[in-house]
Length: 342
Ligand code: P6P
Image (cartoon, rainbow, N blue to C red; front, side):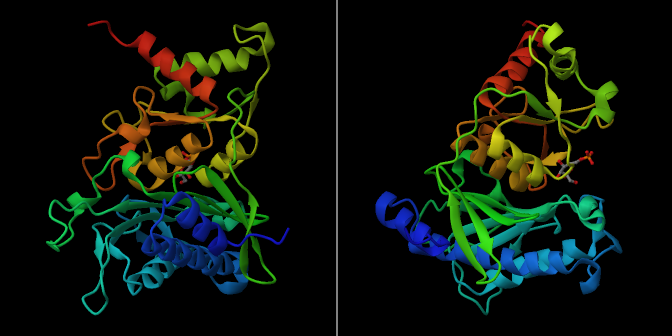
């Protein structure tokens, strides 16, 4: 059978499932093309003069790497002129980025973390781009009202597309438009995305957990209980041994879970008690949560389904527990059991 390209996959999604109108298909093809350009810059490394930091901090107060800026600029420039977006939002930018007046505007809202895991760039560990697409809600479709940050503040269940591009030994694009999860591998000779797996499924059970163990003393009791049980192995209450992985690139850890199951936890911890977690809801947790759910997994903040969280601001943070369904449900149950009875 001839290989299936990204364009053919999206056209079939449009024709067979009617799930993606042409402007959304075009948007996703533009994002995928931008990811190819980012992959080229990432792949050059020291030869491209793209390593190291630029000496500034982003809106999160994090040191910006040169590749953070490059990836952000590639995504902004690629998506401004197409006519399918009302605005964009990025981890690297404070507010929203409306489409300049010289270009036509559309009805979609694109959010992204242009380069997730950038602390790994200089040591050549996999990093990635995460993106989420929402639709600008209009009370009256005939009224073209100006786009504002409030248009972005929709729960993750409203997403119309979500995906990530992993810049690793292979360059892989993972995408859902609501009909399961598809994985495309970049044919670097042809510069083409080729469908290499469709309808990805995550095993409901696992023996592998991903968490930054150095934070153990800061965790809340339910997370501590869950990890202690994993560490107790087959002599403990779980009756089986567990393995641990922590790449410190969410994209890479999530891709491993998508590939063979597992559970990923970045929980609340008492280092920043007033913040629910480290990861960002709109352009990290929401797209990853939808992908994981579309592959048969689960994603909560310990208490609530991530996709049901009503955002209050663009760069809102959240605790993230996602992956193999039965394990995520166990951690969530431990939170419920620990909650004070009313
Ligand atoms: P820590 C990368 O900076 C990131 O946002 C995620 O990709 C990753 O899972 C997490 O932070 C790693 O955090 O505290 O272990 O360095």
